[in-house]
Image 1 (cartoon, rainbow, N blue to C red):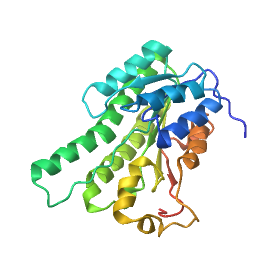
Image 2: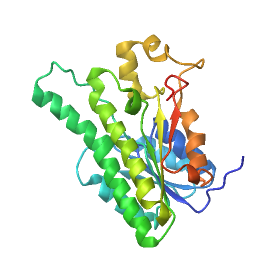
Image 3: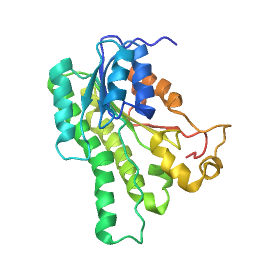
Length: 253
């Protein structure tokens, strides 16, 4: 199926590596101009925009800091002129032992919630305001997690909670703003072979992370990119509010 996204500006957060990089690459192959957000991986982001072409640009923002998400959105609008699609992919997964002192546990909780949920919510808010102001049919695609539905290990409680919040935000946007032309979708991967998942895999072993798979291998970033591109094309608009599971059949609901 040929998908043409030429003329569309798409902001992808956490796009310098892993899932975000695969998504950005696939979208650019379809003709889109990508705003590549990164936090610390400046070299990887700069290398990626040269590969992507289409006048794509890199944008730095630390989403663990309040105010950074909104500034990021505004910078992209200022430099690219518009944002047609927002893809919230950036996220962190930090373990917090239940036995840890409460202030230490809460510090990790707050950081995970800030990056995964608060910054995602702010970017969604900015996108909705922009789409309404311009009277345009925009799309928001949020990368959630299987953990939003299945839960997670106790030390990753904040991660599971943040991703459940992302799913809820997505459904609310779809319900509240559909008649304004705004569509919202969430995608919930299981374990994906990325740097972020490496710490969990190192701790619990690859056997633990792959034992419940229905397919022969763990999901990779390239497995998510085609679905994101399809949703971005508008051909899935009547699925607005839906969550798409990509977890190698490890969790079905």
